[in-house]
Image 1 (cartoon, rainbow, N blue to C red):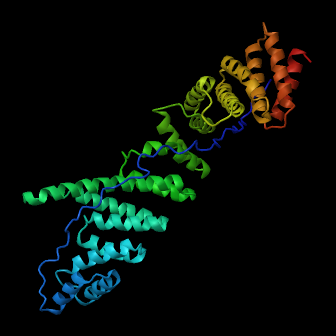
Image 2 (image 1 turned 180 degrees about the vertical axis):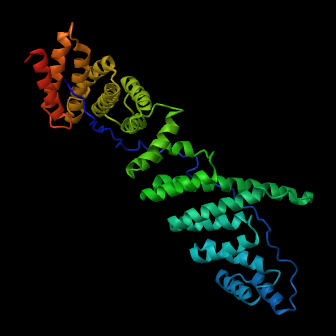
Length: 402
């Protein structure tokens, strides 16, 4: 009796493709309005008769920026409990941020945020310093801190004093812009990061900040390819399933998803994606930037793999007529891949034998096709070779054919 086998080779389908250019970025320049002078930390009245008041007066009159900063540091060290302390810290922070001093800018911004969690101006200024230094780890930290401060500023209570309302509105508008900018900062790092794991970290941070971010849909293909490069098939499949549910026009995702479900023996899902892949590639034009020859090769490979997976799945489920029809169609597309051919020939041999094997009225044409396909399979070194050789002997013994 002709034998089947439990050996099912994995497909050669793997999505090794290049990102076809980053999407246009509406905020690549992102010109934020100048921070609204917040008057967050009032200086108040100065009593020049006290040592601290005299120092504050001198600070206000000092034209030299370096000397003024030294005086501010002196005041902060001597009078940490003074009512003007936060004003002094804010002035120092502005000076250090302007000088791109990353350590002092962070230190002072953290003090200001501890005193006023909605100090979006200080957080944003420090974020810009960190950006200038291209410090990846700090960039994520300050993008998140700045977003948090911006949201607190947006949620701040409208002043009861009408004279303060206009300023409050401008500050809220600025905070909204800043919050959107923090999303762009995280988005840009996803595109630019050579470190794949850090790329994922920035994307997760963006998703946590705003699951509805305008940038997330632009990152789906980038995220998918990153997981493929990391060989994280479950995550890549998760992305593919989510994207393909809305738009099944990405051949790389279709191929990867079909392959993964095929190897899980989830043939219903694999067949669904495979069929969509074949239909898509039969009509999809070459994308911009790809030569006609390169596209033709990719198109034929995708069609061949899509048909092959459907045909082998049908064979594994003993759907013989479908196996025969689909795999015959696949043969021209997979002629250069011996491992795929071996599996196709084996399942074609088994399907034709089962359709032709009838003790009363055998279908001779089917039996001869079964013999031929098994012979073609046996000629290829593969997991099917030994079983195909035994099948050849069984067919010859049962039907006296050569």
